[in-house]
Image (cartoon, rainbow, N blue to C red; front, side, top):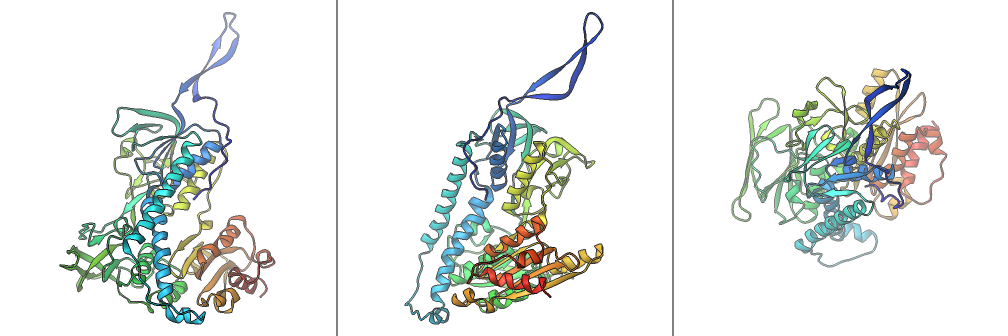
Length: 516
């Protein structure tokens, strides 16, 4: 999430803007050309942002720092999915449940010479921790906007024109020189799945932690599914994954996924069905009637199995929140609800040309559905609309799965990297470092894990890094910086790191590659 920008910013002196093309030469009475008259067009703001998640918030703060007069249509949802129904409350649940897991792990504690008694938790208090954190962060975000002079409208926004926004629920329409669409996404629920919000839920409901079922089926083994499996098993539940792809964790690096299976799945009360669709999911009644999940083969569509569980969580991805924005009427290029954009984040029309003054960031454009990617795209869009060309390198945007231990990555998987290398005519190298040889990890009795570096053999350019192990989400950032700024392996390897620290596990893989 972007840091609060300095309070001293230069605001635009006027909302009046010079309109190009509205000029004509005047001729004096003597027939000599006079200076052209430029007509001005008044707008309410320099920039309107429709949506107020992390992406819209980041764009707004950066726009203020550039001297723009900014308005945000928050839709009664300051903070968006990340703060209210995603990243922030889920980390609170993971933090609380992670401590329960750690204190119940008698073998792990025994390694430190620690013995504890029975460990219990209060579900309602754990849930309140997540809710209170979300509300606190939401309040901080709104205050950071209003304190900098950003006008925050509680209404949702609907496009009346590329640079005109109607405030839903009122008669008011506001105008600006530029508009950024940043409405985010909502959970995708496959056909045949009946969500009741109690026994069949999405991440929106799961974050409320209204109960801890004894047995939960989780449809999908991506980031969200893995994190909630971590929460539920730590709090005493059993989990069954239902995955449409042939293998679990299909979008992770293959080697990392194999290690994650050994560290996160096998030691826990988790089983799985792979290569199947949950074709029909019927809700139950908590403590009275189970949910029914019917599965079919992903290829043949033949029935394979039926299970009855206490609850079902749907983690099958997210879809863009574009309904009701009026984009089709403007001729905006749409693909399954996603807004087409170019590399500058300009929204495109049906012919693939930029629409003057209209921009789109975050989950709504589908380029990279991560909160911090949305913020980076928003900052990039503001730079471009202010005349400084900026192209965001999505390969340098890191990602993390906050399980215990964590998984983090930046850049393509090894499989994707090899495909790129073959297509572009260069060779890649792969180097690894183990947490088992890291003093700090061993001091934490957390020696399982690895760091994996993928690089170009001809230039020693870092292409990607994948880490699984304690604090992987923090360790990945230096690698993202290296990719963004073109730092080579020898340069990274010669950088001194504090000893003993976890980053030395990553450093081992860098040195191994650099000095082969």
